[in-house]
Image (cartoon, rainbow, N blue to C red; front, side, top):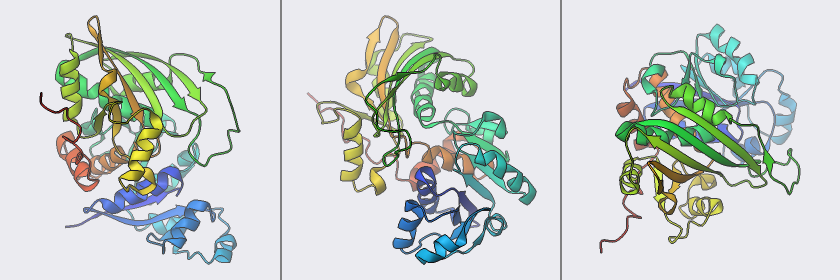
Amino acid sequence: MKKIRVGVAGYGTIGQRLADGVAMQEDMELVGVADLAPTLSVRALYEKGMPYDLYLVEGADSSALDAQGIPITGSFQDLLGKVDVMLDSSPGGVGAKNKALYEAAGVKAIFQGGEKNDIADVFFHGYANYEKGVGQNYLKLTSCNTTGLIRAVDCLDRVFGVEKVAITIIRRMADPGDYHRGLINALQMEKAPSHQALDLMTIMPHISATGILVHTPVTHGHIISVVVSGKQKISKADAEAAFRAHPRIRVVTIEEGFAGNSSFFKYGRDLGRPRGDLYEIGLWADSIVESGDDIMFALHIPQESITIPETMDAIRAACNMQLTREEGTAMTNKYLNIGQFKGIFRPKEQ
């Protein structure tokens, strides 16, 4: 079997996880990762024995890595000459500059949510519009919040049909380990509608969406409150059944110990997941309520890892590995071991 050869540009919070995700795909080969300095992520890569080859992007100071004893395999151009597709997790705006290099090298690329939508041929989500990405050269993922939100809305839309969505996002301010946003003790409002609602409508134009976003001084995940108006009334029981059937949605309860965002982070660590990562969104069964003809529920978004499965889906679509949503997402789920937990938390029969 010929494997799709993949490189990762930017070995930071997302890049580390993308590299690990690709390495788990048995029909893909991770050729290497690219960065420019001996960051903590790169130093940790070295201390782990360099499981991935390191390439240097333009402007990197190789002497700084030499001083740490970190081996360098080659330049960014060397990496581009060895891959079929690049996963670009560079800081926002850098990916746009890298695109010219990808075009010159004839390499496909998948960009993360920090880039502008016009960088790509398709604004992509593995479940909502997989087929639109098939065979395309440049795809862009949705942000972490939008990725998880669309999973849940698409889940209901495919079963019941959805007309309208209203969301409230309680957004973590920074990732664990980030200090550049400062030490704060406040909540911060953004102007409505939030970009997540607008992005949802871009991916799913048949749905009307609006939303409010509040920044909070926490690091371990976002929480999204969602109100869905269906084409028909959606009952609590039917909504919960649909969510439980979705491989990338983890339905939990407060009684089980999932009291909030940190519960998910701790559970990921207790499972032995690298970095405490969870690929699934969390959805509290306790939060599913009927409000007239609408259905309301709350999600937990593990922001550091949530887009990894959809990025694997994007590789599959762009490189024509699987041509349908069902086949593509199933292969990603298989190799990332997504869905193994299904059935664990179902209520006992009375």
